[in-house]
Amino acid sequence: MTLLYRIPSAILLLVAIAVAITAACSGQLYVHRRFASQDFVQHNDVGGFIIAVVGTLYDVVLGFLTVVVWQHFAETRELVTLEAAAATDAWHSSVGLPVQARSRVRRDIADYAQAMVDHEWQEMRRGGFDPGADMLVLDVLSVTGSLIPGNAGESNAQAGTMEHLSKLHDDRQQRIAGNGSAVSWFEWVVLFIGATCVIGFCWLFGSKNESTHLLMTSAVAVIIVSMLVLLFELQYPFRSDVGIGPGIWKATVDHLRLMQTDQHMNPPSS
Image (tube, rainbow, N blue to C red; front, side):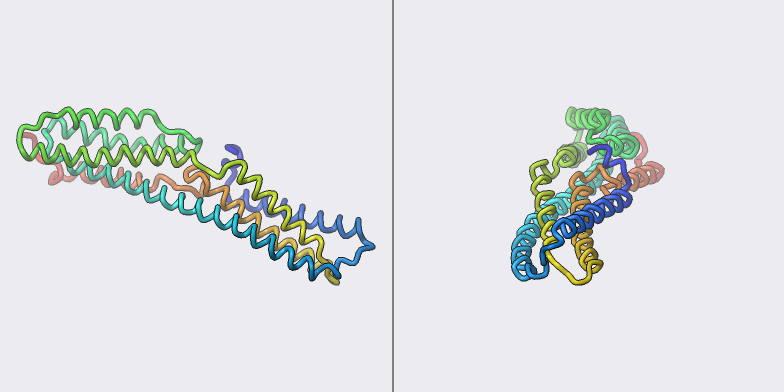
């Protein structure tokens, strides 16, 4: 499966469609040549009723799984946005901390955002994560949590920063966990069995024009395999090239660099 995710999505889709059309048309030609004495046209009425039932049941299963995977993908993409926002909020809320603690907190957050771009997303493509980013989160939580405030302003800054850092930590854990959930092997087996049955029923119909029949069978195969490829590409939100990229973190890195150069956002040491 890891090897398949290394194939560009567009190429994978084209290859899958080509294989599906070849298999579907070859199967139909074989059946109609093997049983040439049979009048397939006379079975169209009965076969049409049966494939309507089978096709509906398959559509329900395939549609349900597609919706579930799509929702998981959308929720994970929103989670990445919230994680980046929590990092930025923690950077800003640390303005009220003592100079030494503030500098360390902001450095760790900036390093964390950069690690997302340089290391974490590459690891996410392989189903892993960057341990160094965990150490940065641990350090910034330790620095902020162990601080003894000297006044009410520092106390408020500490509370606000800890709240955002806790959100960052939780979102990170959910993101990593979400990259490990996918359609189970049993569900894939059910989907492939259903696809084979639906396409197989197309072989049992008859038509006076063989080319038209092959075209209709190919259309059914293309639709089914396209949905299966879509399901495959979206089941792991970070592993395919149509998955969630590090764009939000690149924007976060640029934002933090801009803030670091803005003297108004970096009060002078006291």
